[in-house]
Image (cartoon, rainbow, N blue to C red):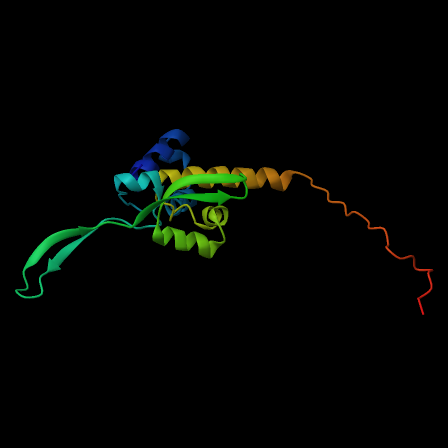
Length: 163
């Protein structure tokens, strides 16, 4: 799912019923909410790449200074990340940069919640983000009551100290 702002904007306007239905302030706020135009490489759609993509450049030889065109691909690893909200492991392809971001955020759940929609550039990331948000909202609505177990005192307070 390569994001294209104009296409998304047209789809939303069509669903609303045309640009006439949008007020002047709504149009600007809609454009701000939409992600910036970006093309995402194909395999990045199936993992969490945290903005890393294939880079292009020249490899310059030491002796002659000859330039050879080459690419640098992101360091992708397949990992099992534990999700506390789902209480299970999630198998996902992640870049090493994304792993550092996940560690810094405090786990996969927090990373998905803290990353804004505009920066989430993959379809899989958006899918997991929505699932985690929905579960957190459901847990927030639940009333959870905790009761402490009262311990029985080992020694009674009335007992005299030993000599």
